[in-house]
Image (cartoon, one colour):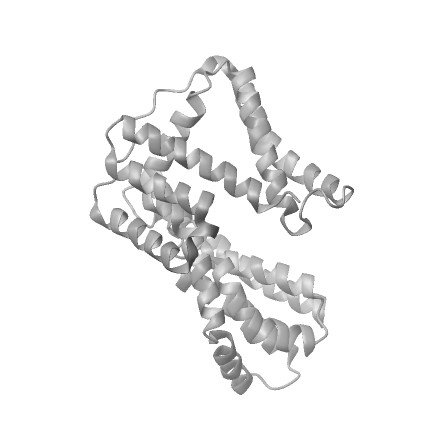
Length: 301
């Protein structure tokens, strides 16, 4: 079945092209960084744990060396295309929704667990084709522009994967069980409101520490979500998982650890206040966290 093999293959091929472009421009550190990411996507499953660990250490070494260079200033966008420039961008979410629904009607074609990722990948390819057709772009232009963006982002590009891996390590280390014992000592048995509050605040707090709600979720699901809300309070697993992730995303809005969301825009826009994005998001994040906690309680109690 079609699954992550398609997603990883395309991502690896794109980063391999970025590596070649960087090598052509004699940006050796950037080229090495992109090549290692390409290798992780293309052959990571065949490298083994030790080799993949060494690959990650090599990525960190390149990022810490300070030799990665930001992209040259991009040329000003052409105004002649008008509203057509938004068409490819809108195609991606539309294709993701349509593909997810369509793949369910074609059993055996796409891995059901990866249907959305496959649909997003297909939508991206369609959007790329539309860019070439509608904007009269040369085939190399998307990769040159993409490499320029990745060079601007730099090492932050791999933070989501690393933070998600950190969440898996925490889960395997039993951190969720320890947190669950602490919550159980504070929240009385059968107190749904206390369990909901601990779950929502815990998701936000762990996300603030680790920078990614996907990293926080395995910990808080094992500590509170599954034992107290799903088993103990008969909560709907889909509701507990979905609203819990939304609570975690509130934490994402409040932390510099989510560098790809909060620090990178400040760097790209040359903001004087490095934490200006976070300060602007706080008035939204805190009330939204309270709303998610109230919503989860209302759907369980």
